[in-house]
Image (tube, rainbow, N blue to C red):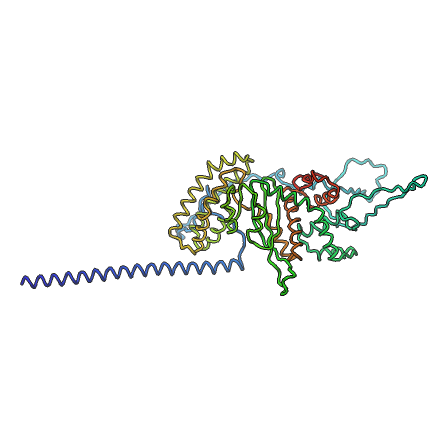
Length: 510
């Protein structure tokens, strides 16, 4: 009997072990199924995100504006309102008084600029005013436009015979931009400003000249542009030394298609304008290179020491490792990665973007308060540094559960891999939080590409870099590019070489 009980207990234990093994296997299979389900859901989410991104690229807006759902000081709207029965509804009469707006607050019509020339037109009544006394005037102003006109300027120099056959006396011609050429400084300036500032291709300008019954060929204009570029090249070289000699530079690059006669298949060459912005000098320098490798910036920045602010392009990683160079990353580019991930994970991406929004609010406070560099640094250390520390902890925690190749995973990796460089803007109040200034400077190149499509040659692309440098610097300093270039072309042929820096846009005075 005892042996039978032992045998029965042994069988029950064996069955229990088998059941435990089966339960363990079932749990393992359930866990694997749940993990597979999560992976499938994440994959579906990722594919849906890619589909949404494609739709956005084709049909949606391109702006990166972000409005947080949790605006400080503003309550959320109660969209989930419980349904009420008619018996629960009541009618309430609300009365209030409102102060009528006075006409004093009305801004009135646009105030006309005082620097414009004024043409006065006196209008008398149709009736006779003989014997009447004028007791006042009604003045009505209007803003009008007279189209620009071409004119022929003739320099007439009288010649005088000196006594006793000693020779001839004649007035000296003023300095001209193109010696023995028919183009004046005003015409050359207008052609270049319309091409590189207003993005009007040469062939369209030629059509405008035709309306004035003036025929100018494309080859003639191209020759004028070349000679003008040769004339102001010393000023371009001086600008280059000035910009690259600063201890803080922002760098970016933008493509430009170039006709290359070496390509027998007729395809254009993909060149690049490398743009160097000096916030301290408020000046820009464009440099054309035939490729996007680091050879160009490496040559120009071989003696550079200081802060170098860039986006996440891999070429700049080499410079970040060089002694004497402190790499400053662009927070706007990091933010852009989260903006791309909004459709994928709105909750996490929105949380990060809200924190970045608070950092930009501090920058706005510094700008509106006209703080000095030292004051801005103190403000950042007091308010921005704690926010950056919170943001760093937040993205590290988020990466633990994020899929590396998902939009959110890529955004988190982008920030974490560049975290030290993102923090570097806090070390000096002269540094900017992002690279947006230089991206704004590149925008004219993008608009120009849509109009004239490509440069006619590599030399043409180099000349374009020269004019983009000058006109971009004019824009940063609120200088009229036409007035600046016209003045420069009038005086530069005889301007002292040791004072040529006075002609730069940031130093321009009429």
